Length: 289
Image (cartoon, rainbow, N blue to C red; front, side, top):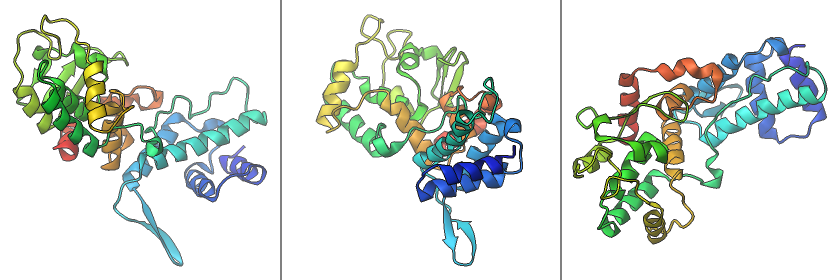
């Protein structure tokens, strides 16, 4: 069965908003002539990358839509992936595919929808840093931690394991030998993060440790800072979401996003994780400074 045939049947038997129809038209234009069972995760991945690189489109009367030069929101890219996955779920429910078939959208990781505002924006980050400088008078590392977390997108575990030996301030790069994905992380950080790190003393091998070199219990300080900044309920992991959302809003392709964030859940995109550090540094400096 051709993908186009499946979408036509799905369209007349499933109630969907008009915007969903437009998104399915995009997928039909790319995949319509392919056999359903021949569609690969690589082709889905390529479609999402194309969306991110293309950006927003402006309708033209009696003509084709033209690019506006503005990036698509992460939520919009998410909806394109969700609508495509819905078509494949429909095919499974209607027993149009073998029971052992794996849809090419399985494992797809797209940017979390900002509609729930479950991330820290650039403006939020700047406010948190200012409050941290004011109230963190004992540990004196929270401002640096926020800047590094926001521009690197690292998880808390990697940040608190970060050793000075793996910090190159001249190059603006931090390195983690291992990560959640099992791969090492080599990540550029912003000039603001570098400046904050230069202010820190180095009494112990780890950057973000307590006075004795052990793990620092940061949550109470974080909660105090977020409360004073008017951001009650913001958890530390939202800095990571903020990094991804900021990169996406700046027009980063899915390949660039996955390379910077260390994402590895989209199996077909593993080849993108080997983007060289020069391209990654240029992207981070363009977005974060």
